[in-house]
Length: 112
Length: 114
Image (cartoon, rainbow over all chains, first blue to last red; front, side):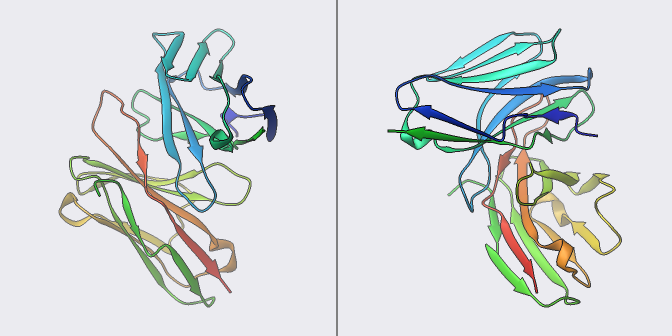
């Protein structure tokens, strides 16, 4: 039962353009969502999060959008830079759950 | 360095041997998590501690797996009688107590069972 889904295994974007990574979830109890970035042979690095009481959160080049009715969130990176090339995971949790449930990841490649 | 620290970074072991991994969380974090990640998948939850109490275990954590967090500080994850299917990246993360805060991950321990 995949409660958090990232349906695009990979995404290729030109440097300077916008990268949009998508994530869908099925569990209505999830109320906190996070994005992590992972380089090979390293642990995931926290990027940005959003609570279900909001529909948008920005941090520099990164913006996360949450559409609760569609059970969908997205991460926008603008402008995209070569250092953004990595695997991006979305994760979700809910009240009392205490643990993060991760999607399968999307490999983002930024082309010069 | 005040991040989550894991040791060793890499471990190669023969099938049937026991292995133990260590995680040192961020000092002020009272929650500690173990996850496992295999190729092409996201991290999968294994177990979670709040201070020294192990509050949740995934069904992925078979009887061959045991985790401890004595005194609520560092944690160990032991795998007994390793199998080839145990080969994975084992990730430790820590976070502060609610309201929910992001979990911060260590660099992981890559286990290869041959």
